[in-house]
Amino acid sequence: MNLRQLEVFLWVAELKSFTGAAKHLFMSQPAVSFQIRALEEELGVKLFWRNEKNVTLTEAGRLLYPEVRQMVGHFYKLKSGLEDLKGLRTGRLEIGASTIPGEYVLPLLIGDFRRIYPGIQISLRIGGSGEVEKWLLDREIDLGFTGVFVAGKDVQCLPWIDDRLVLIVPPDHPWGLKKSVELSELIKEPLILREPGSGTRRTFEAKLAGKEITLAQCNVAMELGSTRAIITAVQAGLGVGVVSFWAAQEPLLLERVREAVLKDLDLQRKLYVARSKNRINNYAADAFFEFIFQQAEVF
Image (tube, rainbow, N blue to C red):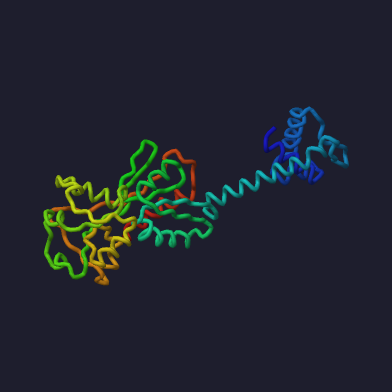
């Protein structure tokens, strides 16, 4: 028993005519008769009584008719829903992001994407880079955005847009007026950082390690759970901090903090987007994945 046989049965029953069903289904009448005969043979019952004037359902046909109508209706509904998904008229997208992409970049992109595809429902979860990696590996999200590379044999992780870390100091700090700051000076200064596991901190640690310096050698005064908290603490004169330029742009422009340039330390980095290689197709996720790379030039 296949869908085509059920469709033919349904239309013959609806129209009470083999000829009418053939016209509706763009089939020949012999082809319609063949499908009905094959269905009857498979079920082992006769479904229609036929004479020169009428086509009527047998008792078995009457029993089968409402069930087939429901089955075919469900199939058409499912098919329509899948077409909506593929056409991005509907769908759901789960995104996980670390603080910098999640708070400073993605909201703008999500807004632009939703204007193109208003039927797509998007959820954005923000956490540390470590959390985003876990969400992705546990398949709780479709796409993950972090400040560090996400490794894993089942993960596709690609560099997305440029970022750089900046050393920010209070507005009246003497480093704000210096051409550059030696790393030996940084080691002595009270330093405010993100919590262990954050992408910003991991990148900064890696940059220092390239100069054979560890955080244990630094005067880490505070570890805070958000970039905004670091900026506020620096503004209050509690120390100096390292944050993403994406987060520092507005405070720097308003002169709430100043940027100090670290000598001989390249703080450039990439933000990354990652997705599972084995996840079942999500048309909305695929479309958003392509969209963010099309928009990458803007950033």
